[in-house]
Amino acid sequence: MKILNFGSLNIDHVYRVAHFVAPGETASVLSYQKNAGGKGLNQSIALARAGAPVCHAGQIGRDGGFLADLLSAEGVDVTHLGVTDQPTGHAVIQVNPEGQNCILVCAGANGTVSADYMRSVVACFGAEDWLLLQNEVAGLPTLLSLAKERGMRVILNPSPITEELLHTDLSAVDCFILNETEGYALTGETEPFAVPDRLAMLYPRSEILLTLGADGAFWQVDGKRVYGSACPVEAVDTTAAGDTFTGYFLAARAEGASAEEALSLAAKAAAIAVTRPGAAASVPYRREIG
Image: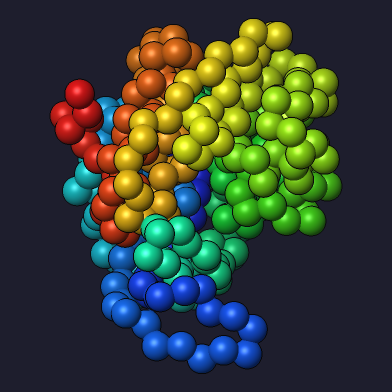
C-alpha cells in the first residue's frame, strides 16, 4: 500500500511580529525566515518522518527546486512531481509571541494543475492505495472522481474552505480530517460534539477526525467515537501542528494501529512541532517521540 499525497508545495515567508497587523497599519517585523511549506508538503514530510511510504504529486515553478530536493531527502517519492513556468506557490505568515499565526496564500503553480496531469498520476495507483488531499491544489472535484474510479481510499483535509469546496460532491471521501472552523463551514454546527454527528449524517460511510487544538481530537465512525487528549506544551509556532497531526495519525493507521493509538501518537508529534519555529522544519522524526 502506498499513500499518494496530491498536494501543495509552497515557499513560506515567515514574519515574526509583536502583534498581527491591523487594517491600515504598517508595522516592523521582529525577524524573517524563508521556509519550505504548503499543507501538502508539510503532510508528506510528516508521513515520511512517521515512517509511512508516501508519494507526492503536485507542481512547483522553476524557483521551487529546493522543495523537491527536500522531499526527496526525507524519503518521499517525487517521481510524479511536475515543474511549470509559473512561480511556485507561496505564503506570507505572521507569527505572534504566543505562537499563533495568520496566513495569506498565493496558489502559483499549485493552481495550474491540469486534468491530464491528474489522470496520468492517479493511473499509477490502485485500490490498495490511499489518496490524501487538501484544498490548496486546483481540480479537487476531478481528483475525487479519478480516485473513486480507481477504488482508492480518499482522505480529505478540507483546508482552506472555499466556495468551490462547499459546492463539491464529497461523497467519495472515506475519511475527513478537519478542525472546528472547517467543521462549522461544512456542517453549520458550532458545538464541536455536533460536528462529527452532522458529518456522519451527510457522509454515513466516512470516518471523521475532528481536531480541537489544545482540547485534543475526536475520531468517529459508525457511531463509535474515540477521544484523544492533547499534550500540554508551551507553543512557539503552531503553523504545521495540524499537518503534523494528520501525517502521524495516517501513518499509524496505515500500520494497523487503533484509533486510540493513532490519536496518541499524533498528539505527541504535534506537541513537539508547536515548540519549534517553522512549518516543515518543525515536524519531528518518529525516533523523537517517546
